[in-house]
Length: 412
Length: 146
Image (cartoon, rainbow over all chains, first blue to last red):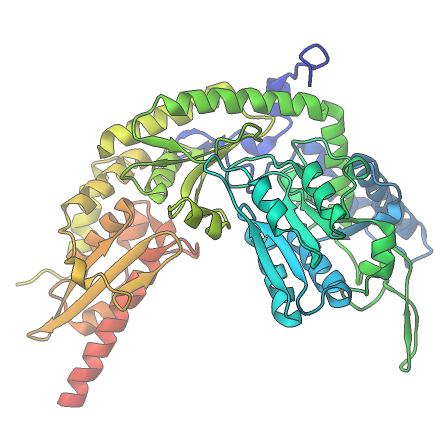
């Protein structure tokens, strides 16, 4: 992104839209640095939930009455917004799921059932979150397929030379994250996708950490599947999307059975609905999907470029400052990162640091961040992770550094 | 006469009251207490003696002497070690029944009740449970013998 086109955001004004930020924790102003775990919600998203339940709550796609029409329209509006957000070719390629974990499980179960056979190979990476490891282990176990893992370099990047050696004629699927939740590494997914396709394999991208931070163009990327979680992009929990190429989704069997995903039902035989409903069994999380749409609009309103630029500034500032502290090692120094600083302090357990920071009103995440294999690769039990969002400030980073400085002085 | 569990808890509450509810000072003080607890013999830090939480590892051994329980404990995180040292102070030299029936109200009074809550990162909660299990085991042993 160029500085010339970047619009400067009014951070103070943005902060005003997030009620949760304006509170004290243990007598100090809250500093919320756990955005990779979940980020906070603007008023417009919160109000949408109440407005829905107060104004037009009704089951969707089923009723003919006015409220049902209104709810259905609002729900499908989010599908259109999501389609535009990731530049999908068709709204039939946007499936609402509970979040990235369910999206990956859906692909693993459904695509895995039909397309993965004994001796086939699935490639994931050493950076993956458990949600992008365990579902593939299920598939490999039940089908007798082989799981291969791309190595992670000392800087926390994927070793593409190693990846190239893993690809064979038996590779059926590659699943990697767009950005690492533990280290912040942004992966070269276009390259990874092209290499996989050259070997006839499909690619799933875990976009959980990208939704709020990075440009996503599924047609340009040419990925086969892309997953997003609403709650990591200013939307409510319990919803998200799975994008899949239409041709693939048509061939995949349903994931869950029930209402909505059927065309006709008899005890002898049931036929299935068209996309995307084939994969949307049961009454969905209507209110949260509608509110998710507002979150997408919120991001569009600020502009992803502007958001990314601000977070990048915080990342650079925080990284510089953390490096001035004695006994601190940053884990994950990829050339391209989202706003995540993960670090260890010699001789002090991350749990203790997290507790002490919390005592000063600072929320960070400690531990293995649901990436146990990655922590093991670096020979550590866990890290302290500070992760930024558009409403965080340099002043808050200063407070983090002050807190860390105090802790280190006390313990050493 | 040996102090009761309640008396020791009240002492602890009184000591912590000097911190005036300042959470940062409370956390620092607990960590200092942990530093004072003697490290466990490394040979005793076995898988069997480990009480598992998600981030905090805690090791615990117990023995019965003259019908009273005595504990040795350690942890890999300073704050858990500090809280554990308070438990050892409260429960050492107490009867199995006393431990089984103990109501640990001091945790709320010093602002640390989250450690006996539901978060899975919590080795401390698991430790209280384990100490009570030891008490039950020793009590059952005693009853069988008598």
